[in-house]
Amino acid sequence: MVRATYFTGHPTGNQAVRPETDVQNTSTIGARTSAPFRTVLQLFGLMLVVFGQLAGNMSMSFDMTITATATNTSTKPEAAGGPTGGRASGPTTWPSAQVGPTSGPTSGPTSVPTSISGPTGLQQSCPMEPCHLNIVFLGDSITRYMYISLVHFLRFNNTWIQPCDHPNPVIAQTYLKENQMLAQWTSYYEQTMATFSPYEL
Amino acid sequence: MSKQWPPFHRMNCDCFRELGKSISENRYYYDPRRNNTITYIEAFGNLKIHGHWRDPVQAAREPLRQLLSNTATFGNHTNQSGTIPRVGPMPELLPDVWEGGWDFTVEHHIAQIQPNVLIMNAGKWPNDFHQPAMRQALLNATQMARIPRVIWKTTTADQQHQYTRSERNSDHAMCEIMECFNITSWTLLIPTRFYHDKQHFFEPAYHKMNELLFDFLGSPLPGGRLSWSALNISDEMVASVVS
Image 1 (tube, each protein chain N blue to C red):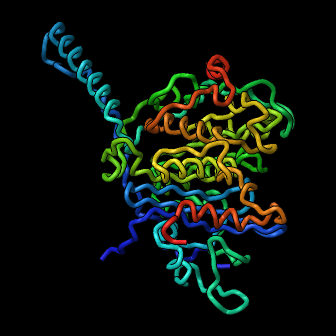
Image 2 (image 1 turned 180 degrees about the vertical axis):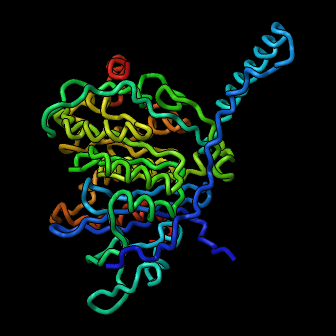
Image 3 (image 1 turned 90 degrees about the vertical axis):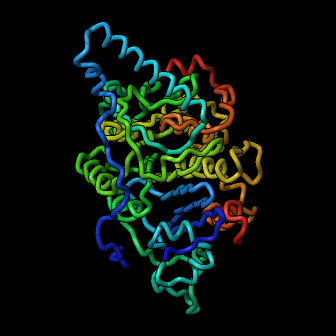
């Protein structure tokens, strides 16, 4: 086995940096001015920020300008005692992901917005369709099907896989012939590739 | 002079599966028009992660025919008939050209892609993420790879709505050191009929996961929002598990 000897060093990679938050110095506005005037300036500044955010939301920009969030670890599921493998009781109530009935942009759990700009190319906006995405999923079969679902959405102009689609890309078994064993997934691999690479196969 | 890639979106699949033999499924999707690169690397707990394509960027961007004829990309493997093997999906088991643990995969394979976001999850496969050394090694690898956002996706409940202590221990430990995308709480609410086997869902479960993921990333996906009622979950039920 060749064990990745082709790697000659660490990737030069992403040059994204994590600048300090850009709102930390707002209190210095008008440091040499009088207190009332400074308050007016701060209110005006706040209005500009709010207006800017509203305008940004309306622009339907889907570029992946990154907003970093600090992981909230303050509220976790209760400590799991005892041996592993047992059933955990009750629903977990981590506030980490935005899963409530409300929708719209969120920066995750009780986030600490740390304005992070990705590489230059990511700062372009793409009206009405996601672009400049560079996402890696690393994980199990649930993660795979989540990936397949997302790629379908991107490939077919913002259209999701439907539950009744047949064959169905998130159910490998729907691609298998009746006499195939479940482990023989070649037809699933070939047909999903054909779906997402229509000009080549 | 930079290489010119064909202007079509494509997914190349480094895939192989056969009963009693190795399982491999790494998918590389690239859409040059929108500049989207979406990659899936299969990782089952403590099992070695592996693949047959050395360069993930090339794997995503080159037409499959070119990839298959390029022995520099895949090594000098030949099949039993002495010809260049067909890989992706492969009709036969070939030697891997890379393999390693999670930290190796992130630092040496995924790092080449230079992703903006890395989403990881061990699922229900036995794993050692509750051990500090393994967590630290993975965290170090993500830092070496300079990935701006590293997210741990928690494990989904199964059809019996079970979420084991070991799963919770791993999720809990990983969420201590990186961003945490919790999908356990609401998948515990999904009715049995939305599972097509013990572990896996019908749509629109994955649809909802992706919607929530992009909300979490701060870049909501376009289009209408999927109602929770599509999964037979009420807003009140969801609110009760996230409050």
